[in-house]
Length: 115
Length: 113
Image 1: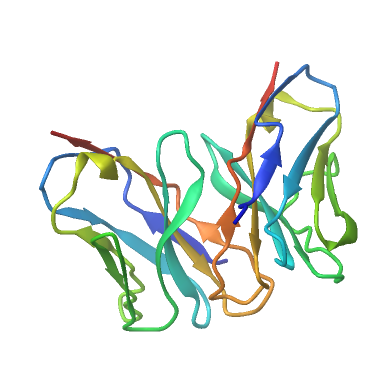
Image 2: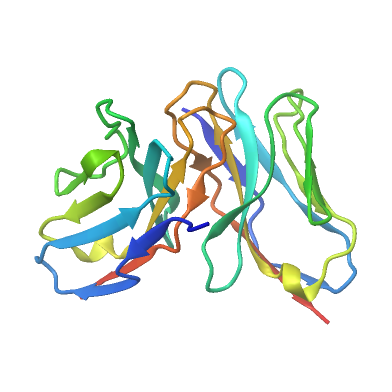
């Protein structure tokens, strides 16, 4: 079946512009995660959605970052006023639920370059 | 806070060599432990997992045993292949629902023929 998809695959933007990154999770997966993969920091958690519960935003690095999940499915990560340090690969993952042992399935990522 | 430490790479091996990538963790309670792999140009894939002490996860010839006494989850393979060249990430997830994966920094493995 279809896996997690993300768009765009690559995004180059100028410093100060806003960007939107999209994630389509696997159908039926109620848990959705955003992570960031950068050279200096490795893989970092950003935000977590589970069903209709309030999202866990504890990993968002600044108030320039926000995310929403519409209808319990598609999610959009928005970065406002991008900075060069935002350059990274943004990964989305989904799982059946937030239970510890449930596998998280990762999308291919969006590579963001801020010039 | 919870954390994962894995050996720095790159690790360079010849085909059929024995592989060990060390991983230790710090966590309260009883987390689940994972190894993820990222092949060149591809996304992260789960390689294996273990959910309780003394469990052994295995897949594609790779193995790792959840050692609570040493807080370790070392990845091993008896005979690596060129196709195993990738970046390997050790990760943990706390037992509470709704917690994200905490990853190590990743170890790059390069296998030559």
